[in-house]
Length: 120
Image (cartoon, rainbow, N blue to C red; front, top):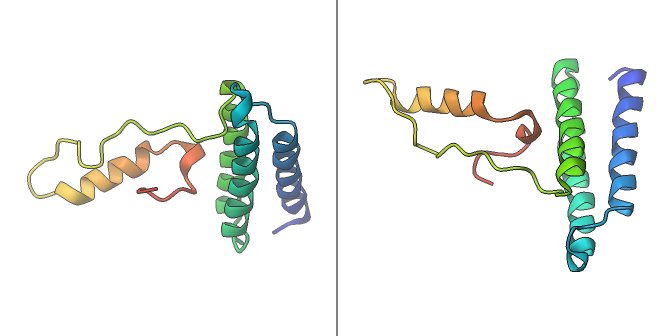
């Protein structure tokens, strides 16, 4: 990881904690639980991706973090937006059932959910 990339990642990490510290929920009784969720999610995802060395995958994680920050601030909701694609709901051609559906689901996954596994 280059120094510039490291600084960018650390800056994003600190930005997430600043957002969590000042977070105000639309429902006042949910503010504390949403703050804890933001901190916990940031710690989990940053630690999960801590061992990445490939510049392309680091760039994708940075884009995901920025997208989640902007979406969360815009909608005032810290939780990731759902994907409206049923698990096995795509029509397939004969012979290519599961692989084609998996490929389409992977391509349809938005950038802000790349770190989440498919069944969480």
